[in-house]
Image 1 (spheres, rainbow, N blue to C red):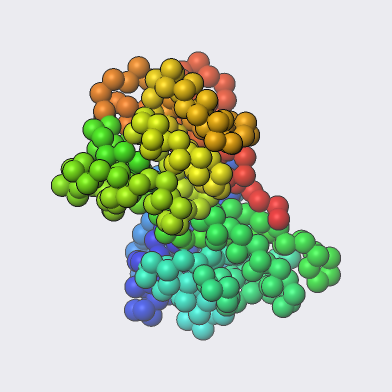
Image 2 (cartoon, rainbow, N blue to C red; image 1 turned 120 degrees about the vertical axis):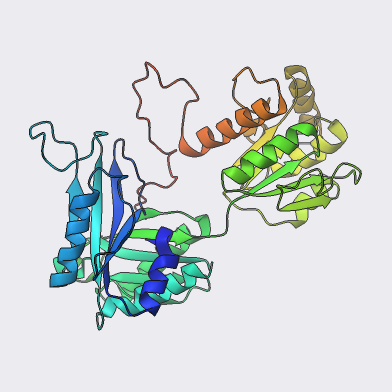
Length: 378
C-alpha cells in the first residue's frame, strides 16, 4: 500500500472514502510482489495495480463491496486449469490479497491516514496489518515510526502490540517488506502480520573515478540506489564527469568508508584495482555488515590482492565475502557492458539468483535469497 501512499494521502486529505487491496503473499511466479496495491474510491476511481491485469477486475469488485459492507477480507487468486473462465493468474502463481475499507469514522482510518501522510513526506516507517488470526482482528493496523513510537494495534492487547512493534523495528532497520508472526497472544492465538516498510534508498558507493564508474553510476541510479563516487584524485572525481551520481567525494577511500553511514543494504564497488587504494579499503570493507563487496581486476590482480590482504590480517571468512573479479561472466568489454555485468551480480546476490540462463532451467524465475524480503517468523 505504501507504493501508492502519495495518492492515498491526497484522498484522505480530501475526505474520500476508499478501499485498498494489497498483495500480502506471493507463491510461485506472479506479476507483482508483496506490497503492491490497488485502491478504489466511492466514485469508482482506481489507482495502482495488484496483478498487472490478470485479476484486476475481480479485486476492483472486492474493493467496491468492502466499501459497501465495511468488511475486511483476504482473498486468494491462483491459476485454474479446470475452468477457462475462472479468475486467475495466467503466470501460474498464487497471490493473497487483503482488502481493507477506509471509511469515515472507521478506527483504521486515523492510523492509516497518519502512516500515509508520513510515507508521502518521505519519512521512514513500518506499517503492519493483521492477515491471519481471529477473524475480528483481520486488517487491524499498527504503525511504527522511526523513533520507535507507534499508533494503532493488533487488537490483542498492549503486550502483543509491544511485541509486534519490536518485530517491526527489525524490518524497518533493514528496509524490508515481509510477513511476521507474533506468538503468545492473549488466548493463545498466533497472529500473522504483513509489514510494509519505507526507508531511504540503499546506497551504492563506487570507489575509483574511472571510465567504468561512469557507466556503473548510471546503472546504479537506474536500479534505485543512492550512488556515491569516491576517489582521492580531485582531477578525476568531479560532478562534471559523474552527473548521475548523488554525491562525489574527494577523499582517500578507506578514510571515507570509516566515517560514512552504511547498512545491510549497502553495496561497495571497488574499481580502482590499485593496491595503495584497494588494500586499506577492502581491509575495512570486508569487516562491515554490508550487502555486497566487489573489486575489479584480472585474476592475477585478484590473487595478488588476496595475498596483500592476508598480510595485513584479513581472515579467510572475510575474504570469502569478496566478489572478485567483480561481476558475472557476460563476456563484457565496454564500460557499459561491464556495468551491466556488475549490476547483474548485485541483483543475483540480493535475490538469490544463479546467474545462469533461464532457458532450459527448472528453478523458479521469481525468488529471493534466504532471509531477504520473505516470510520472517520472528
